[in-house]
Image (cartoon, rainbow, N blue to C red; front, side, top):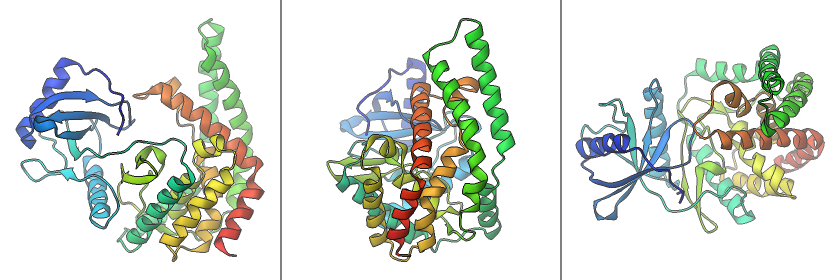
Amino acid sequence: MPDITIPLAAERGDRMAAVLAGRYGLTARTITQLPIGQGTVNYLAVCDGGLEMFVKNYPAGADLRAEQAAITLSTYAVEEGIPGPQVLLNQEAEVIDASTPLAVSVWEWMPGHVVPLLSPPQLAEAGTALGYLHALFADLPGNPSVQGSAGQRWRDIDLNAITATIDQLLEVIARRIGAGAGDAFDIVAQRTLLERRDQLVLVPELLAGLPAELTMQVVHGDYSPVNLLFTGETLSAVLDFRPPDPFLLAYDLGRMAFYPNTVTGDPDWLGAAATLISAYQQAHPAVAAVDVRACGRVALLQLLKSLYGVRQHYLKPGLFQDDLDEFWLVRHRTVSVLLAELVSTETLLTGLAGT
């Protein structure tokens, strides 16, 4: 888990300590905010006897029913051998305590660290765990209507809406620069947004080349290096499962195999993808060849249609906006690389799929 912490306001710390004591029977000696996460505010609580707990605070308006379902999925995975933390039940045997405005879940603290750029052994570990997860989740029930509509919604990319948002962001930047308030990020954001607007014309062709039938099932939903902990070369925890709504299996696989940090940071990123996918296939031999072949294109399309990071910067800053700014730039560079190397990527994936 992260070593860096953020000083916590005394009043908020007192409220958190009261929840831990009253609802979990934990006496917190120190509570510190962690510089991770965008959807929740996360804390390390050190309790009596040196017991360390990870506390996740859900914002007002969060869908706690969906978050409970995600915790149930995580618990199932851990019970079936996937490394990860156990959630602590409150005094009412609930996985989320919403008895106060400070809604929280409390988890055991896991050893290990996030590794932004994985080594070959770590890639193999990550691929193996994802393969086991997908095999484990393959038979979980899913609402057929949700399953079909989710896949169709993902394919129904509204290019006009994306272009309109880009234009809105460019107008904000232009006003800032015109008022003499522009900064270095404004300049690079302007350039990348203009590039992205031009790249959007490629989306229809990329979609047309995507197979009609791709596997829809329960997946992790946010499987990436930031949600994996390693102790040395060994995977010690898989974190932050999303609710168990069926989605594209190729999304989970492609997002991890072609993660932006890997594509932009590893000179042999195609080799890294091959290492991860090969380990995945060994753990999940029943995976359909079509999903392996399509995972790179799915990852590219997901990145192309997303303005995550830069949209927050100008419209609604996130919890750690500097991280989101960098994430936007790395993701945008990844789009450029994957577009330039699409033929090489899909040749690799066809070979791995054995077709």
